[in-house]
Image (cartoon, rainbow, N blue to C red; front, side, top):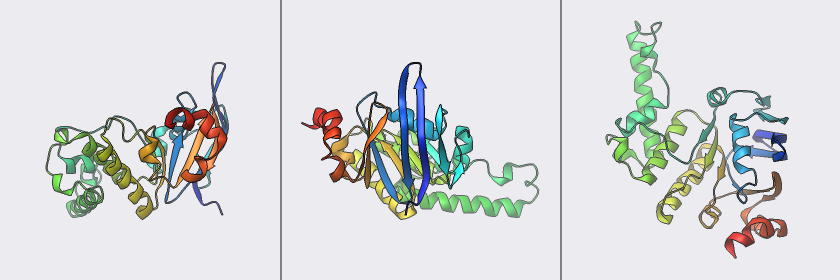
Length: 256
């Protein structure tokens, strides 16, 4: 049975005479790390932008929890747990690592005029947020850096901080664009390993666009291959690597 948390049904997106996404159907399932591959211009980024709400499809629908979210704005999708990250990690360099995680939870109740007089209530809520943030820092391996300014983190640590901020936001679906960009292979594998473990342990649905297939294939549960706007293959890494259309359109060119 398909327990897809997010489903894309017949998505199509055109830019002038170019069909960037052509009738794509896919499902993102809980606890599954999905890897989206394809040559440049195959439609990967456009598909991610459609799911995240940065573009609206010309036709087709996007469902989350069975509800149509096709025309929700990005911040509305964020509010229901669908979060997109970008190649460049975004953080507040002068704030501590812990404060950066806390910022992802939004304004605390004590900042609300309506709630501020009830000090016991919002102090308890802030304490709960700090405890949760510390747990997340431990999950992503940054607990020892909690008091360090985020601007002093290495590239790999900033990627982990971004992952922590995503978790703090309450994300259930994570769309990631090149999470290992600019990282050396050892650090890149550490980031991918953390993502894989968190997807499994927390029951997240994750879709990653990644060009470093030699690294990412080892951690993916499922691979989706695109070419000329179409989804041409789907399956385990081992299965997809043996499909002639995939080898011809991408893998043979990159890995031969």
